[in-house]
Amino acid sequence: MILGMCFGSDGFIKIPFDNFGMAESICSTALIFIMFSGGFETNWAAAKATSIQGILLSVFGVLITAGITGLFCHFVLGMTLLEGMLIGSVVGSTDAASVFSILRSKKLNLKNGLASVLELESGSNDPVAYTMTLILLSFMSGGSSVPVISIFFKQLMFGLLAGVMISLLAVLILQRVRFESTGMRTIFVVAAALTAYTLPSFIGGNGYLSVYVAGIIMGNSKMVQKVELIQFFDSLSGLMQILLFFLLGLLAFPSQIPGILLTALLIAGFMSFIARPAAVYCIMKPFGRSFREIVFTSWAGLRGAASIVFAIMTVTNQADPQNDIFHIIFCIALLSVTFQGSFLPLLAKKLNLVYDDENVMKTFNDYQDDTDMVLIETCIDEHSPWKDKMINEVCLPSDSLIVMIKREGNTIIPKGNTIISEGDILISNRIASRSSSDIPLVEVPISSEHEWTDKPLNQITLPKDSLIVMIKRNSEILIPSGNTKIQTGDILVMNM
Image 1 (cartoon, rainbow, N blue to C red):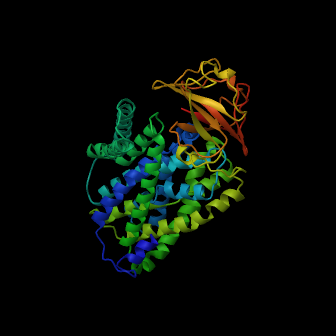
Image 2: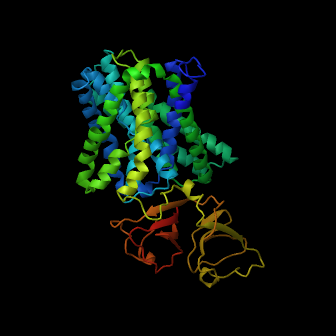
Image 3: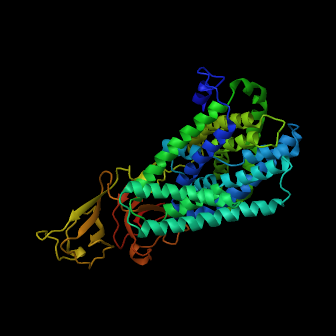
């Protein structure tokens, strides 16, 4: 963002650029891929236990924060009520990319599912802020007379339904159609993401919500070469963030910032210490969250690129606000990422909300870079000593387990009495370096309330065609057997 300011009209390079309409189109496209990638990389198995908290924060957290902030702007800063509410709506959502780039770069694994709460909230609250911004801009420009509830309901319901239908259709095609290459499959998923945004937007729904929901459903479905897809969208999301921040910096005029700096500081301070904490407390306290967890969740509400993109809408719209909303929001986002973001890792440690091993909760894409385990393929030929033997008759290293058998194009989840045949390809795990196989692995954190807690593996019911490959317990890696008891705090690595 700062680099863009240096290249802009008021910067050192002085590139003349003030086309807010073009910037809005480019930034909106970038947000599509950022939000789809966020959903695609969300581990629903890990997020499900705290999903209600995340969803409530994403909806009512934005509404409460925006409402309180709007009243502050009206009664304290002297803005009109509608303009104050507009500013509150634009900055009402939190920025997932900013939060998790900080947590992952500092290798912070938050306790009690806080990471999942923040991820789900940040990924799904942009559509709420976007809808509120559209409604308020419509009122300020003397537009729609349709009731607010009707517009809000239409935006969310059409967006949700479109995301579900498009993603299910895309998954069905990915599972049944044989693509010639990984590149063709990637192009298809990109097209599905664009469709998930375009279709609901055309019929009056929320495209951003649709894209995020589609990402979650597709990312948590079984499909071949998912690793490559996650890597692609992770890289594409990073590229889009760089483009987006640079372009937003290019649009800003540093010479105009001193005139709105005090206003931006007051709004940023009020949101950080009053509005956001009030919203988080009202929502999370009924779930028994501790004061430390509420404080951290409040501080983790960083404002980022999405807020600035929504601020561009206030410039291109005919609402004609009295204040320079774009530069106000620009300063708030810059202050939030700089100061709140800088102290976020320190606050997490001071509040004792970080696991001792300091390994950040990973999606499958992140897990690939771990050096704890390797998946090895072993081909069984006519001379193999394992040919025609049962799994429980094979002598394996103590830290190894056969997790899958590929036989004549089919995948078999082995049991102890499974007989190994000539031509089989055995997939086994070993504690070593990274894997090159595209076996879909997910991590399932075990909380004290989980149904598998304190049960041995041979007494739990796993999903069909699934197997627990290994268990991360504190700083140790365990290769499980049927008598291994699952404990609170374990992270189960499963093939799905």
